[in-house]
Length: 172
Image (cartoon, rainbow, N blue to C red; front, side, top):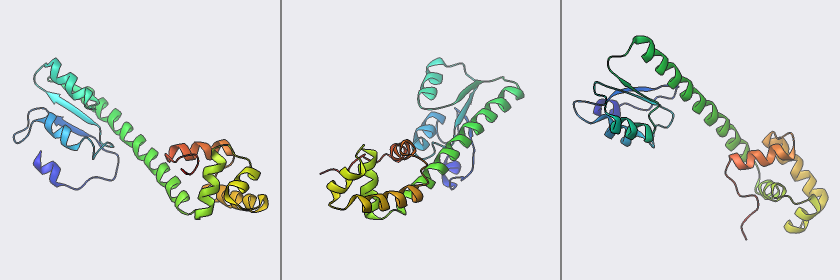
């Protein structure tokens, strides 16, 4: 367990096959230590004991599988394949979110203000009034913002805003 913790995180889809009984640390304790840091690494527990409370505890803490020995090679390989697919999905989702963050970071302060007001449902004229700028200027900022965000439509932009966890209008 300590050796695993001493290695740097892997930046690729992966999973951890973990025996409940480890020489230096209980497998459930290791799971707790890495839970927040390695959400992209599903854990498959293996054990020689059919311990229902332990199984429940591991699953509640996020384990994707709990195998009791003896089990076939096919069962383990299937569990690993499923865990790797879950890990891959997390990486794909995170990569998409990072692209969105980068697009949002490329916006000017004014474009961010326009975005927040537009996704809150205000019309260009209302956005202009809120920001003290003309409707034509709002249209220019909105066009640049839509282009930088790679948004094809207003609903697309609203979805991006939600995925980024941004408020829909600046807090006054």
